Image: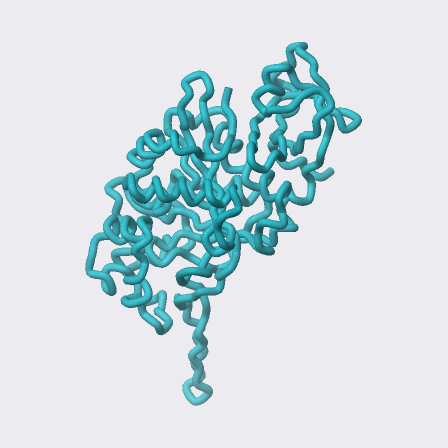
Length: 344
């Protein structure tokens, strides 16, 4: 069974294994034991209510219960940029015009921005390549929306998600080569690693404070502004299906897009509902609707994906599923369809 639960200290070894498979570009999952251990402790203290909003982060583990192994992680930062600046490039426009010469030209620009300060962030989404099949990826990503829906008061009015930008099979980022390298004089992988381990002061110290003209960048760099890494395309499509959109902000290192949405407009926040559990051990076919189901138990949060029958605000699940969720006959659970229902 694949189940979502809060991260635990015992997961550190599995987290390091996942980090070794993540490659360049996932800055929040560096292959660094001290950093990952601190990340786990921060998540535990968040659940225990011991941290200020500026430091809070929820970190979820996807566990294969048969192997007792964590095979994926995803997270929510409660409010970015409150303890240290949060940087992105805003894609904008400057107009150059001359009536005398009859010239009017719009020029795309990149401007260093802190516009997302205070917003909640979806981050650290990574699934072991061996488990990238079926609906594991959807479960790991979308469970965060179900959690936000249940505990809306813990989050900001807007949520963002920085998507991994384009880099080739050798880890070369065209955007970095045309922008970052000129200001940092280090390799993309090094800057990426430093940022992921919390060493971000160099960003403010070295990044340009004036707009950059996009037309001055190399052609391959211009083409990848706002584009995602090929492996990230499914994740972008998934988030867009939940209501997030690209609004013209990109990552300062690789040019990847930032998606964003008002939290109250997210599908799970608007459409998830509480229903009662009905225990039924009858076999339900895989053609039955797929639901994300969570117990809404804050300190012992559990969520999973089930094919089940839902009617009259009652969800039929078997005893094994109920035990995994920590619920029983008549308990309330939060549900939403895995895939958004298309309007007629």
